[in-house]
Amino acid sequence: MKTNCSQLVPVLVVLATLAVAASAAAVDPPKPKGQQVHLFEATVRVPDRGSDDLEEYNFRLLAEVLGSIEAARTAMYETEVGEFSAFLTNNQARRLSKVPGVLKVTRMEDPAPLPETDGHL
Image: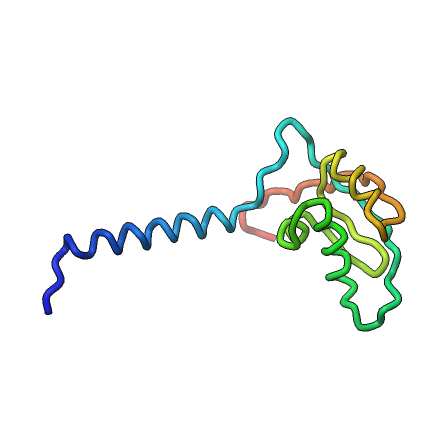
């Protein structure tokens, strides 16, 4: 059975469309326009449940403001027992401070960007 190029074109168009959609989904979510993003630290109540993954607990708290666990993972800078830091707008930080389980949200000094190197350490 022979396949000519005109039969492959629709298949290639569909594959290209899926590839573009997948790469667009992998890009960081857009930042709110006109709002600066800063590093905030959240102090949270540690759940009593010993079986609960504390890192996932932090992601779930932040996801209540950002809309998804994936967005929370992207914004998260560091996570520890009882606290985490994340890159947020002032409005997102204010909303996070009202999430049940969050005790305090404070703005931290933004980390300095890594110096550019010429490939040598």
